[in-house]
Length: 321
Image 1 (spheres, rainbow, N blue to C red):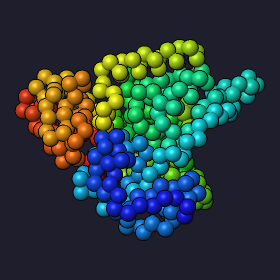
Image 2: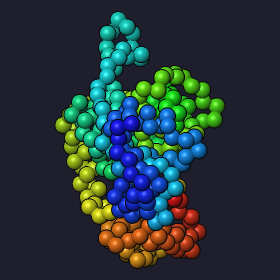
Image 3: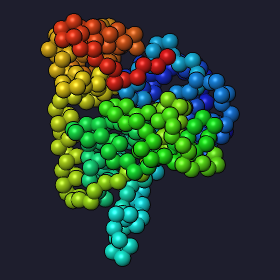
Image 4: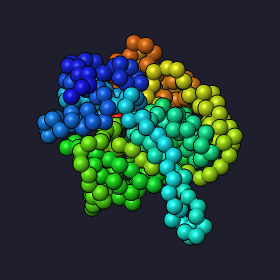
C-alpha cells in the first residue's frame, strides 16, 4: 500500500461543514490499484466510510469508530465513448456518444465537460457541490433534473474488491434515494484490479463509475444553461459559507425552505450554527460551530415545523458517528 494513512485525525478538514471528530483511521490512496489493495486487507467487520468532497454529511463530534477512505483526488477520469446506436439500423451507421466518468469527478466538472462536448441534460449538476459518486448514491438533483435520469449503466465495487456492472433497473430509484434491489443478480464479475468510490449502498457496494446518456445539442445553449443555474444558485443560496447543501428533503408538493421560513426558523441559531437567512433549508457554520450545534439545530427545526404544519421534515444530510 502506497497511500497516506492517519490515526485519530479529526474529520473536520474533510467535510464541507468543517466539523467532525476523529476517525480511528483515515486512508488516502494514491490510485485505484492502491485502494483495492487496501480494501483487500481491511477486516470484514471494520466500519467503512467513503468520502469524496464530504458534502451532504455531518460527522458527530465523537468521530467515526472505523476506517475512512478519502477518494478526493483520484477516480477523476472522464471521457467520451462512442458505440453503435442500438435504436438505429446498422445500415444508418450512426454512433451513440456517451460520457463515461469515474465517481471522483466533481459534479460541476462533469457538467462543464458535457457542455463543451455539445451534450445536454447534465447542466443542473454544475451547482451541486459534490462528486458523481455521491450524486449516484443519493440521486442528486436540482432545477428539475435528477442524476439517474441520465444513467445508462454503472460500475460498483464491494468491500472485497469484487466489481459489478449494473443497470438502472437493478436499483430502486426515488427522490434522493437509491437502493439496490434485493433480487439483483451480478451481471459481470471481474478481478480486483480496479476500484473505488464514495457513498455506500445498503449491501456495501460503492460506485466506481457511470456511463451517462445525454442528448446532442448546442454548446452555446448548454453553457448558457449552466450560467443561468449558477446565477440562480448564487442569488438564492449561501455560497462560500460552510454548509452541507440542502439540509432536508422537500416534502411532497411543498418546499422545505418555505416551511422552515414560515415557521419562524430563518436565522435561528444554536451555538455557532445558523439557519441561513438567505435560504432556510441551509444550515451554515458561522465559524465556530460544533457538530452537536448543527445536529441540535436540525432537530429544533424539525420540531418547530412539525408544530406549525404537522409535517416531519426528512433529513437529506447523513449523520455519521
